[in-house]
Structures are given as structure tokens and as C-alpha cells.
Amino acid sequence: MNSCIYNAQIYHRRSEVRIHEFRTSLYTWYLDLDELSTIARRHPLLFGLNRWRVFSFRDEDHFRFWDDSRKEQALKQSSQGLHAGPVSRGSGEPMPVEAQGAAEKRVHLSATSNPSKVRSFIDSYFLEKDLEKPHRILLLTNLRYLGYGFNPVSFYFAMDSADRLYAVLAEVNNTFGEQKPYLIVLDEPVASDENRRVFARAWKNFYVSPFIDRDREFVFRIKRPGQLLSLGVDTYSGEQPVLRAAYSGQREKIKARAMFLNMIRIPFVTFKVIALIHWHALLLFFKKVPYFNKDETDREILKDEHKRKEVTNATT
Image 1 (spheres, rainbow, N blue to C red):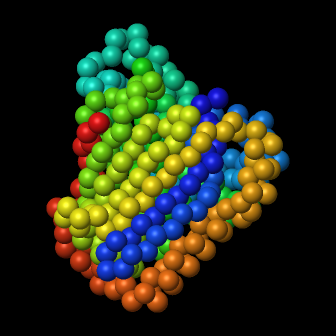
Image 2 (image 1 turned 90 degrees about the vertical axis):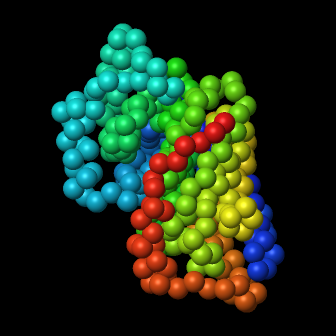
């Protein structure tokens, strides 16, 4: 299977106003969206697809930056086969007609038979941005644990028909239930055997932490996940890093034993994520790091139309 679990380490270092850093162990999931029902079948007591289990994948946790009418439109297009259309490679060069037919058939079958709606949302989103429909999508995310879940950020890795990475969609969440997408389009696709890092820079323009101004930029540092996981999302003020956040890990097959061991090693993993966020926010408060009010920040965000750009070109 393409899907796996990563036993990971998270590292944060804040350098603006006060130095504050920490490192912690977690585990996260790397899921081929076309394999979700297979995983649920193999592990019916542990893995749930849109149902309560120890670990649950729920469509409602993703694409929350779309309203219900936009989701309904994407599902309607998918059920009617309207996602089938001209397909190009990640590099922009046209695919052969035979390959187009195979890709379109695969996308349509996936959309109509996959119990998860997220694949249909992804297909529609990419077409909206005038990009190739992904031949395969792998999602790096936290699953709900015992019904509770929180993802600071989820990453969709889009592969073309030659299994090359050509785009990454980051879903950034805050603790207020809001979500913002950042779409990273590579200058040239990355094959599975290439050890190249992708760099992209985008305006943050989103209220994530009350201790970092929205008028900053995210710098994404991403390697295509393989045996190892290596990515980072840094926050910059001009050319100065304000916060460095790194995510690294080791691949592990999705097996019942691995799931049980992770439950013992890091119990209540998603509760740990949200608890760490609030604990370190409290420490920053005691260190007298400036606090930015959410209502005022949101008003400022609405003024900066030029900083709401959703698509970012990346270099490798």
C-alpha cells in the first residue's frame, strides 16, 4: 500500500522578542485517498471512514474553507463524470490520448466508488486552478482519536500519471475552527527516486497564533515523503525568521500492531496536540510576548486583497 504511518518528531523555535523552543514526539498518517476503504476493511475495529472508531478519517475535517454549496457542486460534477476532461502532465506537456483516457477513467471510478468525498473536492479544486487533476493524492494528516481531532496543518501531495509530485495543497487550521488553503505548484515535478526539496513562500495573512502578527510570510520546505518524512513551515518577517517549525519521521506500515504500539507510546495523541498548543501559548504569555487580538487582526486581513493569493509557485 502507498499509505503508512510516520513516527515523527516536531520541532519549534521562536526567535522574535523571546527565544522559545520545544521538541516532541508524535505520529501522523500518510493516506492514499483511494486506499481509505481498503484500510477500513482491513482494520474494521481500529480505523473508521466517516464513522467512529479508535482512529477516524472524516470528510468534514477537510475542505472546510469551502461552503456547503461549493461541496455539493463538486460532488454533482463528480457523479456526472464532469471531472473527466483534458489532462496535462505536471510539466505542462500534454499526455498521450491513451494515458488521458486511463487517467480520466481512474479519476471517475475513484470519485464514484470512494466512500470519502475529499477526493472529489480535490479534483474539482485543481480544475478550478487550471491544474491537472491528480492521478493520485496522498494526504499527510492527523486522524481523529476516540472521536477528537485537531490538525495544525494537513498536506495533500498531488501525483501525476507518471507518479511525480507536481503540487502540494496545505490546509492550515487555527484553534477557532477556521481553515485556509495554500496551494504550492512546483516548477518541475519530483519523481519518487529524487531527493529534492521544494521551497515556496506565501503571505500568512491568517490568524493562527495570537503571538505572531498576520503580516508575515510562510516559507514551506517540503520533501516528497518516502521512507523518511521531512518538511517544515517557517514564518518570516522580511528576511528574518520569526518561527521555525520542522516535522521529521520514519515510515511504518499500517498494521494493527503498529496502531496499538502508538496508542501505548503516545496515548490520546490528538489531545496531546491541542494541549501542547495551549501550554506553549501560556508560556509565551508569561514571557510577555506581544499578543495580537483576533477581531482586529481579521479586520486587517480583509483590507489586504493582494495578500490573499492562494496559489504559490515553488522551486525545487
